[in-house]
Image 1 (cartoon, rainbow, N blue to C red):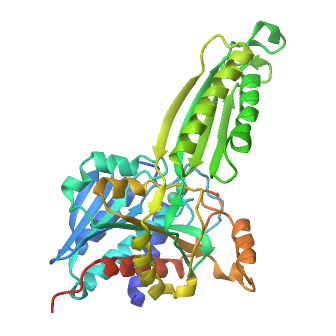
Image 2 (image 1 turned 90 degrees about the horizontal axis):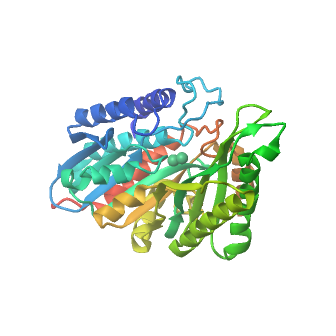
Image 3 (image 1 turned 120 degrees about the horizontal axis):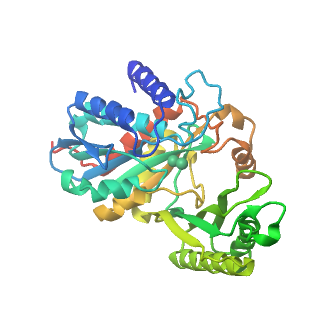
Length: 406
Ligand SMILES: [Zn+2]
Ligand SMILES: [Zn+2]
């Protein structure tokens, strides 16, 4: 990557980081992506599922490769103190999707500039709303694959607190399925001094929260991956008022669809039983808000792609991160296209933090102590992350595209 290109990308990254946008509101980001692709003479389709952008570069006969980046930020108040920190109150690129957009713009440029060296069709997709797990589905429902050629492979990456300069790739189950569930518990409010005249939804919620912990501990086999997290508990407004209702927001992760179904059944059973036990006069409500399937990296496709990634960072720097409990909706694009997916982790943590670490256990300990994605302190280093991310996408795409006919 030429120096002027690298510095332009670093400016783009800082600009995107300073201007984060929430899910399905990525208008400015989409504009940046579309303008960049038009400059490179890609066919550009905008407004797919509101803010989605797709660029198509037709370059002769050969396979079609789809590269994907997500664009949305999170409702987090940034606390990094970076000079290019978010200028939007309460919104932050805390998951690094600004890095994904930057790297895909860089790869779009690299692959356009080197088009004499490959043959086929490149599709670059800038997806809205990964964080709410609706963006990939939205683009498919809005006719993505009627509007761009259907790919032979879907490739992408997610920045993670691994050392910058390393890549994490796992064949098979790589990212967990996710379900977001809203539970509303109905009590009967009243004066805080006279609880006997009420059905207290706060106590009902507390009992439910504790009881839900038993699902993973007691109902799922130790050999199965499962997470039930209650990320929000909302009830009441004042110390001496017993409120009418309480709300719980749950995040559920799994790999095995049977485990997922079992957890959802157990959650419903416990929520209804605790409401009954509390004397609730009205049935609780359970609402599945968002879901995304697990990302299962195609084994043969992952092997083929690993070789390309190794050419960028060296074989010893392509590590197996194990199955990740985080989730991604990118698998929806691959499933809709009927194509294999290969999705890897891009190291973004300052390599200096790992100085002197010997062995995997020590490395894992350092990773565990670093701010993770979604933290108000999450701050991937721009260098060498951008360069590696651009080269990883470009090399992986080139691996799947054809050599030109000579
Ligand atoms: Zn995220
Ligand atoms: Zn993310």
